[in-house]
Amino acid sequence: MSSSDSDALVLSDDPLHPANLIPELCRNFYQLGWVTGTGGGIGIRVGDKVYIAPSGVQKERILPVHIFVLPYPQAAPSPHTDRVFLRRPSLNLKESACTPLFWNAFELREAGSCIHTHSQNAVMATLLWQGKEFTISHQEMIKGVRVGGVARALSYLDTLVVPIIENTPNKEDLKDSMAEAMKEYPNAAGVLVRRHGAYVWGSDWEKGKTQAECLDYLFEIGVKMRQAGITTVVSS
Ligand SMILES: CSCCC(=O)C(=O)COP(=O)(O)O
Ligand SMILES: [Zn+2]
Image (cartoon, rainbow, N blue to C red):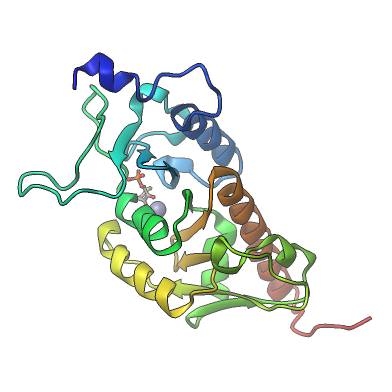
């Protein structure tokens, strides 16, 4: 494929094209403090293509030409390449180190997007919930969260449970523990990574964004409640 052919995979006048959405969403997430200092990001899958941002760059300054495009499902990689690409940026960039983790959401939940945040709300939740689960109940925003991130919405009467996995020095090493947590908690809409952040997904980019917003709200209110010493639920 020539570079102009492969550029056609990321150059579009449509603001909803994933190569336009990823830069826009990353700018929004930067304002929320989710992707500062180059950390965090989003991967979007539409049908048989996955769109991924570069690694280690200022995520709020990404352009469509910086986007990698990978086939989905991923063909078996050759011994000389880790991954198969339909399009790589001409600049000397590497795909996000989150790619294998985003793949967990695509494969295990048939997700259409996966968002990785370095939100301090998520990190604080993993510090105040020292076990392997974050839980919260009796919050209206629980109704915005979907079972498994992609199915029916939870009810006000449901308790939200998000598994917490331990961080590792190398991001790639999180793939297996994230997948194990997703299998052990099939109803969870995301996975928290202790002292690091969260991975949240949805069936498309909009629903993934909504899931990430609802979960981040619940991490924040949960943290504030613990810090205020509120441990009981008062009814009526
Ligand atoms: C200060 S960022 C450390 C690496 C990390 O956790 C991260 O999310 C960055 O991922 P990237 O997409 O830049 O490979
Ligand atoms: Zn990270």
